[in-house]
Image (cartoon, rainbow, N blue to C red; front, side):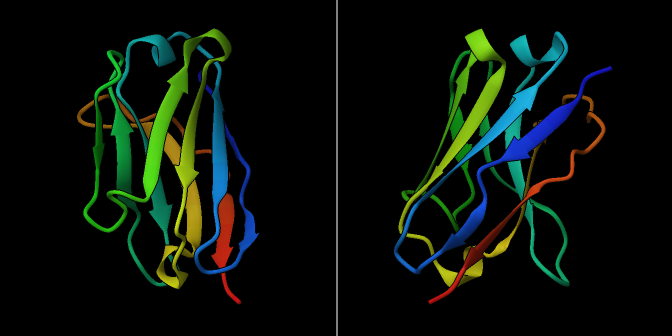
Amino acid sequence: QVQLVESGGGLAQPGGSLRLSCAASGTIFSSATMGWYRQAPGKQRELVASITSEGSTDYSDSVKGRFTISRNYAVNTIFLRMNSLKSEDTAVYYCNTARGWPTISWGRGTQVTVSS
């Protein structure tokens, strides 16, 4: 069974940076489009970035130009580099498959809080 473990969240100041990691076990990682999602209090979970197995990326308008998604097949991990953080980026961040790939059981996520 595939498991997803997110890490790297924390407290950052507005304008600061964080790098999230998602370690995935199982074979689906090598072929699936993977994505980073976030869920803010009282809001629905939303997809903010995705990356195909070939490395093509896509971003929501709210993070475009500030966030960068990448993946490392050698260690079955995807990353989310977040720059120029804003208070509205505060949320629990999750990784999972994206763009039509079967969803894996959700991990616990990692909390990102942007506050001065």
